[in-house]
Image (tube, rainbow over all chains, first blue to last red; front, side):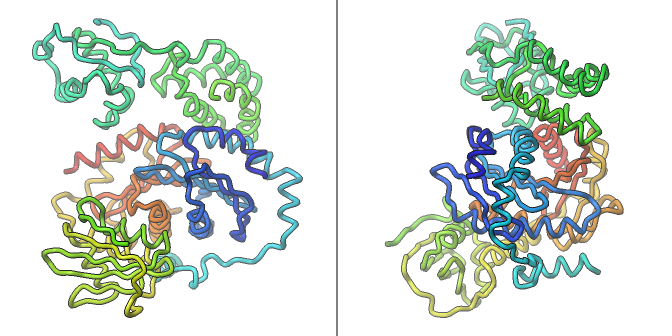
Length: 148
Length: 158
Length: 215
């Protein structure tokens, strides 16, 4: 599994609860969690991030990373050309450490034969994450205002 | 205790029973810190509860120490600090990549963090590295630098 | 199985999140001085709600506005009707947002926010938006579309709801040139553009301290 092999150092940080890598069509490529984490959340969270990063593509800035800090933890995400990485942590985990490891190890992972093989194995579905069927009324309203 | 050379996040203090805070002419925030000194809360916990940053809490604790109001409950462990050898290695790697400006960059970042090479806490290392990387404009050199120092930094974190 | 409790110990928004995330079939009865209401859950959604004289989303809104009361959760009770079609987190977020806007006092002026923060170290720009994405304070630089970033805030908040919270302390976006922090403050959204030479935890504490000082 690619996370255990390439992102092993991430899994060793105390307080990391879950790591998930998705292909750009939202199919999960690999998931790692600690024993207590509810994996169902990972099935639901990724589409929101694909929508976020799809919209950010139209901004003139190059935002490729988000961090949410809430009472009981942090949620880190970073988008890559063919994939999305999401990491869930306890509040005491230092994001700078996560970033440092990812900056080095994700490059190795993305360039690896294993990863390229996985990408080629299953044909990519075309996903229109900003299609109205995936958005609620308020989101459609916001995006309409963005276009005008 | 009258002189406090270094305030660390994990230190725990209590009020010196032989002194009276009233005589020390304390400001509002300093009183707030004194009220938190219970012999159990760490410096970090007190800072968080009063929304104070590192510099502010350090200044307050130094003032309280100078007024002989503090008694340390736990002594800090030497392994909490990074050894000098780490900074020498880091400086060397940076110089190979960036030239003599590397030393200036390193000192600038230490100053940004209000830290010194002596008594630099290990848990601040990831933030320190990130700020160093941000000083390198060239993205290719950024990636190269991170790859080179990765095994060194890893040995101090894990 | 029946679970009972007080809304002071467990907020209704959290009860809704739990039942939806666990995909329970359940009926939640809420009793307060202002009346008694019912919420029905199935297949990970709120499917029906009643709080006289309202049904549907309006009933959910009214129940979320209650400050105290008792709740009772009964598992396995089917809904008598299907009056709520939108996803549960959209219903809850929109209700809480409306409540927020309604209860905020105008004792402070949002127009002070950018003036207060802009002088702080590390800050490149500050702008304040309402929940509709309209600018209420500060300046928009040319690469900022306010509705785009309000959409981003809304989505990040939706992500938070998956983690049993309807509120994040702060969030930020990052690129190679800096950060864009998003902080909710008194029914408005404070966006702070910062350079990379900041220590995030200290920076956020500084912002929070400055915002608190506005009263």
